[in-house]
Image (cartoon, rainbow, N blue to C red):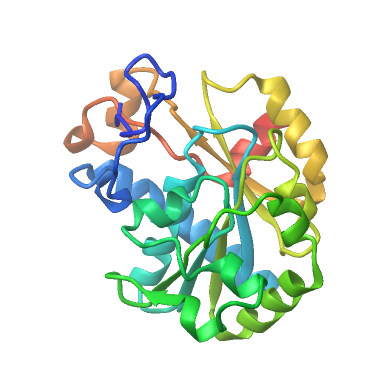
Length: 257
């Protein structure tokens, strides 16, 4: 399997957050990138069909891989040259997307929402062409209250026409109220579910809190291929090893019902 840097070998989260280049995750793994291309195709198809631009990426609890999914999906979408993509770090408490992309927290989203920075000041270019980032900003006492305000609604309205796709890396649903607070402000959520780590009951609870109509699909993180013959049949001998699989949203949603 791909060993994501923020997971221990036994699958438990590390107590100390290491410094990680988020784009180095799976760098030498061809299958990892191929699965994100598949996810990109599914997201692009739905976005173009339904004219969606503003998607949240979330999970039930922490350490399921939502931030890695957000960053790599954003990079994959931008890499085709067809879309101008913006990533927004809405997980103000942890700011993993900001740190993982090597950016400073400030000026960022909270500075803008508090009136201390302009939109132009908080949008940062990245090393990936067509991909921009808005960092989290300084940590505040009650992010949910800040995100529930009119200023955040206006912020989303302002940035929506500026990009072809906007991905919000939002906090996990169950520990805090931040993501349910903004559920009606996005055009849908992509759910990341870490197999063998998160109890299925928590997934169902989180989806109910968001409202299933707001969940466009899901990504299964940590799926191990069942057998060598299965692997060879679908991916060929070139990819003959155990990997983390990213499963397309349609199959995942069917399995969750």
